[in-house]
Image 1 (tube, rainbow, N blue to C red):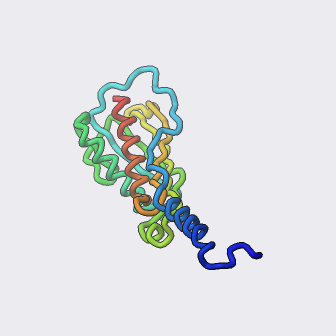
Image 2 (cartoon, rainbow, N blue to C red):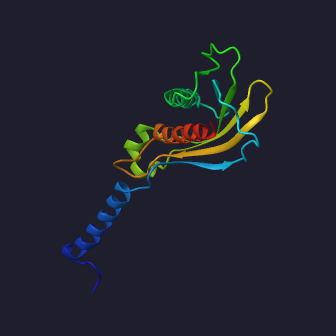
Image 3 (spheres, one colour):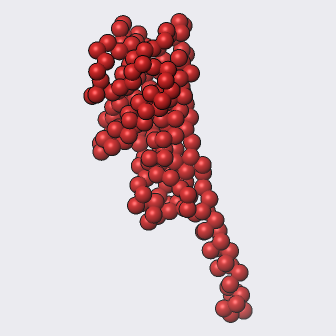
Length: 182
């Protein structure tokens, strides 16, 4: 009279539950990076920038590692474009009079570490980072462009990403947006 009274009638349901659990953990959202909002570009297109100074800040506790990684990847991406003579951070800058300042301010950060991804799989969530980018002229302080960029890691079990993946997606968008401007 009771449903599932013998052990063989429970097997299809247990298999279905197992398949559903594994399917949800192995699949997930793809990682992404996108410009969330942007101000209109300055009416006059900026001239060719010879020197860029990149400054990265955050008021979020324990985000020093992410600040350093964002700054290093941004400088590397902009330098690799060969559109600028010098690209440096303020800490290492030998640029006495940079043309343009790129300020990257971390507005929000949801970290997912390798350990939490290994232990919790898809339940660890999705790493997400939002950065406010302000590009300004260092000579007169005039703001050239302002935009916000979001980077997300993939979510899932087997191929899910961490905070570093979200940062890479974010930096790809930041560099592409800056290169479009020049």
